[in-house]
Image 1 (tube, rainbow, N blue to C red):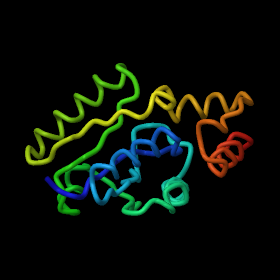
Image 2: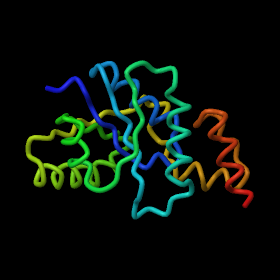
Image 3: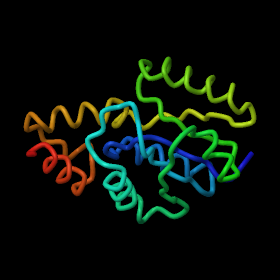
Length: 160
């Protein structure tokens, strides 16, 4: 097994749930690349550079964590980085069907690359970036879900 894992996602924006999964990944692997998708079929609130900056700021004090953009198939990015481990976070049972389907599809493209599922702590298991953006747009206090600088960025975007 590789000592390097890749945790891919859009991180639009990064939440305490994401950070929890990164910490859990670091407890297992000596190095993790948080791979920020440059493009997505999702309607993204933040541009790739903004998301990269937020992830870098949120993880700056975590040893063994690198933040990089990627585009295209994540299995190709994993091969480029010479690792066979992808990390995916599972918050609720509703995530499982999609994540399982994606893992099996990735396995079809690259059977040598494994997907490892990690669950965030129960305090963060219900957090989603989409829900945070929706509630922030309605004026909710989201400070318990994201770092302060992320909350400011979300609120600034919602004002536009």
